[in-house]
Length: 621
Figure 1 (cartoon, rainbow, N blue to C red):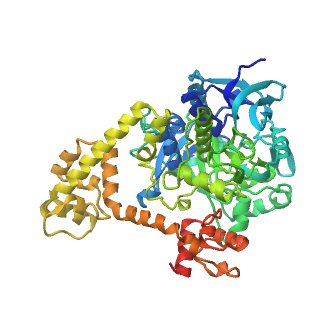
Figure 2: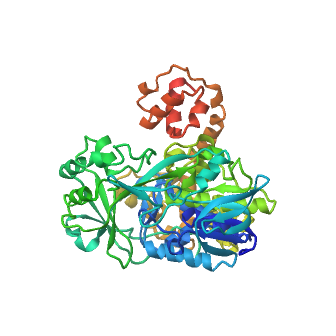
């Protein structure tokens, strides 16, 4: 036999596969990572970026547990931004623009440096079984690799079909062949499969773009980073992105190709991502809008290739180019490769346990787009959980099942397994009913102890967490004792246009004002000297704890209320369309499913906690 028996075989080396292989191997399992192309490990198939709203929180959670997505993102960052700074802290979301090639290179190097990870380049066509339990995999070359557990992370490769206009051809992504065999085998074993679609925009030669008439989008002045580890540092020099807009001429040209678009002529049966629509979808669904935003994103430090974010399309290539030329700044644009749509097989995730192990076959795990999700971050966190649980089960240890009040990862997995999804699932802050607790800044406090106990997060991570907690408590205690005088504070309040104080007040009380933060208070020399002894992360942690204490307490109360939702009935003939405060998606889903109780409504994919609040107000608490 060519191979020894492995503990775990991970099939696919995308974001899910890489995290699964790293986690299981780091914890001590002997892992074989099988990929169709060793040069495409952790390839960013779509936009060269990590994080964003809710997705950035997931990357920080992966990092807090001991995964590598945060570290790899930091090492390959070319621009970093903290989104939604003008909103509440629950909405703050880190996002990095990345060098596509460096991201892939750093992932491969990290995996190669782990002695518990082996590699093999081939396509897996089936899993092998012994008495209903995984015994190995078989590849396209007929090679059998024996193992105790398998994690399938096939991405968009399962019977993948690429569409450009009326042309279509097999492929997992442009230039790479599809994977066949696994879907048919799993269906024969009783699994249910479906089809989904996604798309990508054209890539353009940056030398042919006129940036001077676009809006520059620089990174943060004082950038942060994803990883809590000291292994990475915030980026010092950044590369700008740019923004431009479509117009009515662009839309008119695009409409001429609609009959040749597989989105409209019936060539594609699978459903696409609701919240990342193609440019065809945008101008059709939002016909009243005269323009749509286009983000012009560089693909790396030393390349001229540019990603046209917001222009995902599967229209004929000549229509794509003609329409692009009408966008300001793209008048002379040259296309490296056209945008395309891809449809692929997935398996409804209601066939999984919360560990991501399948209910049909013991020791078989699914992670990533095979479960109906979209996005690097969603895939990576599933790979991490699947890799951890495959290892834990083989070792006879307790599984890792993150809870909804513990992590966005827990929200995602609970949604998938208990609600399922019939369209590509994307994470949003609105999906989490505990989002004030699940912030990007406190992922280490929520998860690092768990990662350390499992043997994934390092001792260095644990010590850093203990240091942060200690400093945060010291800041909190100081703020409860220290006082600020009107003479010191009022000049700052005058600058902010806020009402002044007339007597001394404790720092912990004054910091509750929404217009004030510790950064502003450090204009007072005594406060600046006191806080200089503490790390910025600890100061921020203490400040958030003070400002949001009341909201956090209310969040705990809401958790108790959700348990009582089973008692609130909904009439079978109720018309959800008359509740305009519900999201459009919620009205559609509730009408189709007709839930009998609000509790059942809360488990429907696409019905957010905000929608449940609307129902609670209407039906009475």
